[in-house]
Amino acid sequence: MKKIILLVVLFIVSTTTTYAQFEKGKWYINGSFTGINISHNGFIEDNFGLGLSVGNFLEDNFALIVNSEIAHYEKSLGAQVRYYLPNTGAFGGIGMEYKTIDYFDGGDKHITCFTPEIGYAFFLNKTVTIEPVIYYNYSLTKPSDYSKFGVKVGLGFYF
Image (cartoon, rainbow, N blue to C red; front, side, top):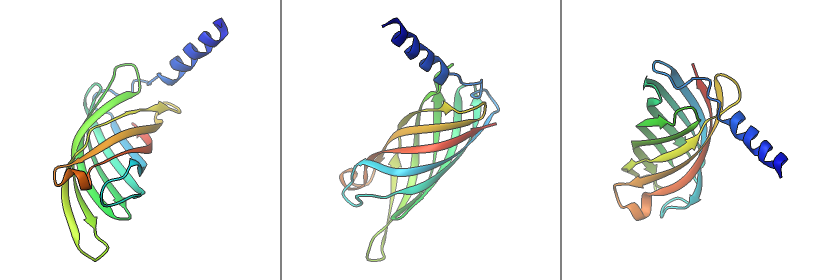
C-alpha cells in the first residue's frame, strides 16, 4: 500500500511541474484536434477539425488568447482569457467565438458562442505540452440547435 501511495505522489509531482512558463510576457501557441464531441447539437453530429491558438501572458498565470478553428461544417474565430492555477498545469478559460456554419444546401448560418473550458497542460519538456481540454460552446442563437459540449487535444508551445 505504501508503494502505491508513493507512486501516485511521484506521478502527481512529475505531471504538475510547470517550468515557470506561465509568467508575464511569455507567448503561447497551440495546434489542436477539435470537435471530438461528447454530445451532438441539433445540426451536426460529428465535426472534426483543426484549431490554432496564439496568446500572451499579460500577467503571471493570466493569458489573452486568440483562436481559430476550421472544421468540415464550420469555421470560427474567437478570443478568450485563460487562468492557470499557480504551480500546476490546470487552467480554465472563458471567451467568445463567432462561427459560420455551412448548411448542406449552400446557405450559411452565423452565430456567436460563449465558450467556457477547462484543461490541463502536461509538460513534455520545458516548452512543449499536450493539452486535453473539455469545452462547452453555448450558442446565443437557438442554443438547442447550435450549442455543443466536447473535447479537444492540443500540442502547446510556451516561449
